[in-house]
Image (tube, rainbow, N blue to C red; front, side, top):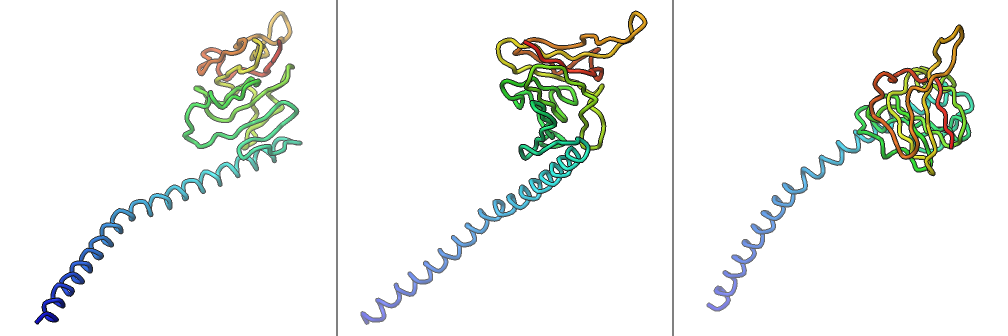
Length: 197
């Protein structure tokens, strides 16, 4: 009798354990399923973004003679001049992307699109730089931020006809730190960028 009595609870315990393990397995699978699907989508999006950046960088290197890649999303066009590819076609405002010590201009308003970073004092003809499709930066600047040190200036200038000739006219700018995400009447007019103390 005792042997029958001791086997019955053991069978019941085994059955309970089996049901518990089956329930735990179903619960674990249900919890794990969404997290398994999410990385696949993220990876796909990241791969698409990486492929786009690679295409953009290849275009910059092809259209800007002597350019060299210096970061995943950036090329050096000349000493102290770098161009950055936007992180995505829907990138958030990039004001914070302008590194300390640089004056930066963006292709579009609100600090979006391609970005040109200038480090050294001097005059820079925007016609010397092109985006990945070969379009010139001349008459393309729509926002700027001056993150230089010591109150240094950045100024955007436009060639205008005056007094029987042409001259550069100041259209936007400011001393560090300053900037504008909307250039108003100066939008898409800059031909030259100047940095000076």
